[in-house]
Every structure is written in structure tokens, then in C-alpha cells.
Amino acid sequence: MSAPDFRLDGQVALVTGAASGIGRGIARGLAASGADVACLDLAGPALDAVVGEIEDTGRRAVATPADVTDAASLADAVARVEDELGPLTLAVNSAGIADAAPAEEMSRAQWQRVVDVDYTGVFLSCQAEARAMLPRGRGAIVNIASMSGSIVNRGLLQAHYNSAKAAVVHLSRSLAMEWAPRGIRVNAISPGYTATPMNSRSEVADQVRRFEADTPLGRMARVDELVGPAVFLLSDAASFCTGIDLLVDGGFTAW
Image (cartoon, rainbow, N blue to C red):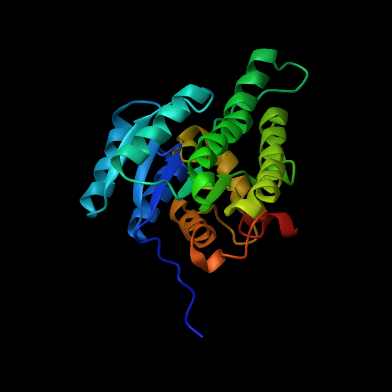
């Protein structure tokens, strides 16, 4: 029996939210695993920078500025990916936002913005990606959810974010079941507290210490620790995995 194949050589991947945080780390990790990578995010220097980092490794990369809440923008981005890099076979949907507010004070606009980006944006991204993959009968999609879709974070007032991430997990299962007969695998990754730029600011240092104390491994995840799970679920090593939610939380939800 041969060893499992975790490589992504010869494949074309699209990563949303690629300009920062988990999305940026995964985009770079997919390139290190052999894929050519399209980086999708709002236009700006950070998006151009990650493309340059990938190109420096010898892999092909392209910036695809787009808004994940705009279906037409996503369709144009996928078309550009296929025109410049080739047939799309892999996707990671990591674009997301967060902002906290007590539920009784939260405005409809604040609620809607988080749901639009974190949930509807994932659906629209999957839809655009699958429209390219389904006619070929091949593809793998990973959606970045959160352990906040399974638990309620102590001390964080984010009913909109938690609800959206729970919806992403079930959306991933639903799409997995719908597209399984047509050759597309869909899975979710639910990270725990992760040392992204958002969680590395001095003003949240006390909160971060609480996060770390509540995590059995005693620390937050590094961004690069999300790369392995993403590569696994996209690779042929996970060829019989679809519809799962992989918790990568340092044991947090096991308490």
C-alpha cells in the first residue's frame, strides 16, 4: 500500500480572505504544498504582498480583488483565475469579519454586515467555485468556520458571529451532501483562538491571556497550524472525507 498523498502539485487553488490572518497563512501553505494560488480579498497592498510572497517560492499566483458579498464580483474572479492559472480544483473560503456588541443593543446593520460576510459570503464563494468545478466532476472546498459555531465564547458578545459560523458548518455539510455524487468534496475547519493580527494587538492582551488560560494546550494557535488541516482536507489523503467539521482548537471544546 502506498503512503497517503498530501501534495497539491498541478492544482489551482482559490483562497478568499487571502490578504491577512488565516487566509494569508493558508494561501502561502497551499503554494508550499505545490498548488498555484489565486488570492482573493479586497484590493490593497496586503493582497499584492501575499501574491509576491507566493511568487517568490516559485509558484504561480494572481491577485483577484473581489467582494465576497457580491456574486458578480466572485464570478468574475473565478473566471480570471481559470484564465490566468487554469481549471480551478481547490478552494478555501476564509474571508470573515468580527465585531462585538451586546445583543440587546446590536443594530440591524451590524448584525446584517457580519452575516452577509461570514455566512452569505461563504455560500456565494462556494457557489461561484462549484460552478467551475461541477462540470468537470472534480474539486475540494474547505470553509473556515470557528469553534464559536459549536460553543459560546465566554465573555465575548457576538451573537451574530457565533450564529454565522454555526451556519457555515451546516452549510458545508449541506453542500457536501448535494455535491458528493458530482465529485465535489466540501468540509469545514473550525479554528480555536488563533494569533492573528486581530488577536495580537496590545489592547486585547488581557483578553488573550484569558483565551490561553482556557485552552488545554495553554496558548493560541499559530496561523501556520491551520495550514496542515487545510492541506489535508484538500488533498487526496482526505479523498473519503466530506461533510466534516474539523475542530482545530487546542482542546478548547473538550472541557
